[in-house]
Length: 234
Image 1 (cartoon, rainbow, N blue to C red):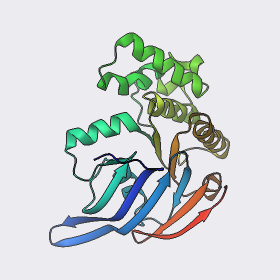
Image 2: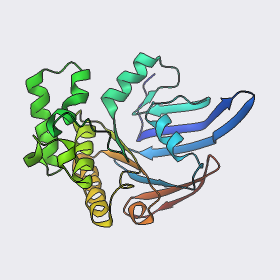
Image 3: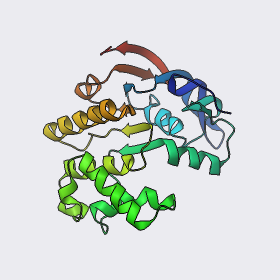
Image 4: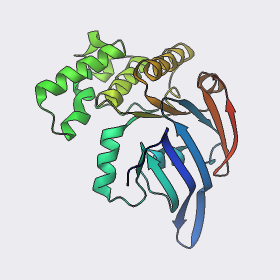
């Protein structure tokens, strides 16, 4: 079901309970959250508060135990795995702390990978990947492999890969966790530029308050629930 909405992401009374044997571990406990289209949101909280689980469910990488999830106006709660994959591939880009680049491939080949899944021709994949690398300021490093790049440059390649399919939503899980302060500033400024220039909705899970404060709004989680919400930049 598709609905018109001002929100890119809606989570309504979402529970996620992991079961190991006879023991249940609730990661999210009735969490409700709305992220407006074009918003840049940061999510903080102590370890075990449900931050990564929230991101995985918002990114359709995982299913809630119960509750409703709406992504770009599409109620994904009852979709099949194939349908979820289609929503993910069309609407969502992911950036992770560990970069997740393939060392045997060049930067442009890494960036082009998501388009291969869509069946895009080789020439179109390369052109789109070069444009994405240009967007993150790395078009001059297209032929280099990840091992020839700094940590900050590898994360910029990962961001280019997340953007190559023109997603409406960018989900970043500790994107600066492996970077020094200088590269952290570069990456956060880049994410803000993408948010403002392209209108991309950006959600960042972070432990770094300096990263969180660059966003429009800060949501704090505790014990799988929203503990507080603060508007930082109107």
